[in-house]
Length: 188
Image 1 (cartoon, rainbow, N blue to C red):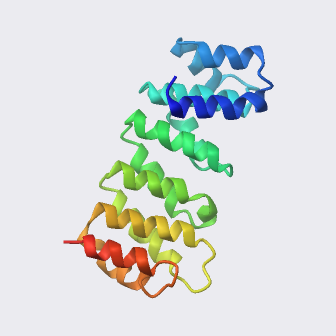
Image 2: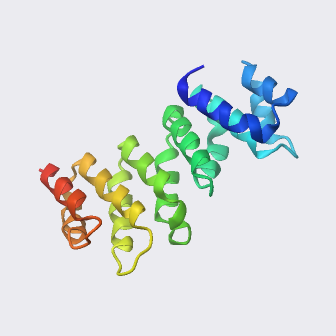
């Protein structure tokens, strides 16, 4: 059991009550059984999360939809697990989904992990989505500065010159200025 799976297992043990179904999902190697949890009615969220995580990490694309839903969950720990599994899944739909979640103005409070996933994926969608999201977050009195900071850091890591204008604008924001300066120094 790797560290990411152990962290998920420990976190949901209490939520599940450490029940027989929990032990079964943690221990099974049967992908059909795990996929069945994703489609069966009445399954608790913790069971769907374990099944989606395990399938995603194994490269089984049946986990994609469940992982995208978890990536946009209000519980940051679920977002972290989903992001990790989506990165392992290597599904070509992942960058578009992460870009859509990052750019959804109604869900900005939950966009931190989609933004970080876009940076990790280094997909063609990554830079345009991060630029668009950051532009929206540079408005005065924007409360989601942590998401804006993740965009700035991501654009710096990606090192794409298209980000120069928005990073220069980010330097005018006290919380973003140091990261924006660092990001600008990384651009060609």
